[in-house]
Image 1 (cartoon, one colour):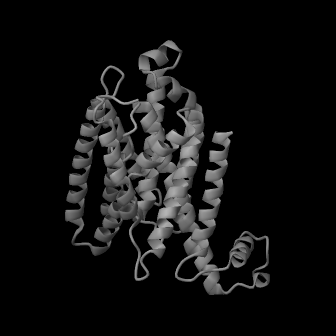
Image 2 (tube, one colour; image 1 turned 120 degrees about the vertical axis):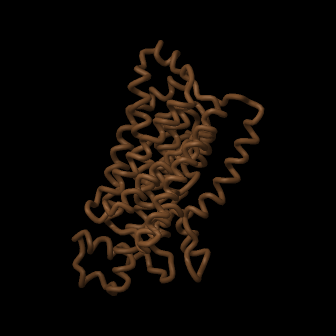
Image 3 (tube, helix red, strand yellow; image 1 turned 180 degrees about the vertical axis):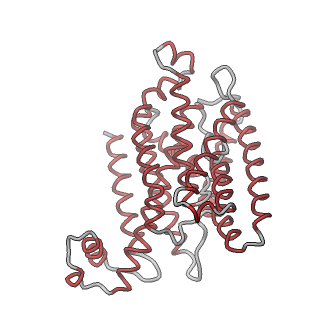
Length: 344
């Protein structure tokens, strides 16, 4: 009953925050008008009968709604990626940022921007981010894993190394792009993380990765549960660990890479959210993965709402807010687990 209550509570919170995100801002818009705009844009209500000004319609349909949906998809994707990586590595400190996936995705995305591929193809940036994320997580896993287990120290050190390498290469790309102000500005956007000026194109970009990752994750909840006891135990119970590991890494990289492609580096969502949900919902990944996705959507929509409303004269970057919460929590995890060489 407690787990069902948690699921219902998270879903209700997601709906509430989505409604507030569309309603609140520099110009507050009545909920009734928001509903009329959505119905009229979907063809269920005549535009003339909606009784909404063009200004309000533009704010709701072209600015706030795509931004809210993008934020929900980003949060859910990052939380899913973090939950799968934590289960795979049997380590509560694993996340897209800590193991270098987000910075690898950022390197792929910024490289595509610097080369002008984004202007040539709508899919160039997200596919490049996906490739960067996948290569990074494979390298971290390959180096840090020994005899089917990933020690905490090895995971953090490999992640730090990959973050440093990817960060250095990203800086190199940026240094060569300084002469082109627009390209340099776009690269800095990815590095800071933000949902500013997100459009329906960004929703279309992340939606396939979000949907595919969410559906694919459903087939690996049992495998993740069994692999929590170690790869040898999972193999004894009939799990093809090599295949499962490859798929789990691919799903995690796809989810995190797509998020980086549309919002830049939004740190610690994949660390903070799955860890808290695990404490509340339990370790069963068949429920944990989707509870984490819902909680991730709630977290990012909430952070973005604060980013838009806390500073009247401007907007706080989403990555700044998420790091200000996730950073201290990460330090708490380190202190909590410092007496143990291995976790989980």
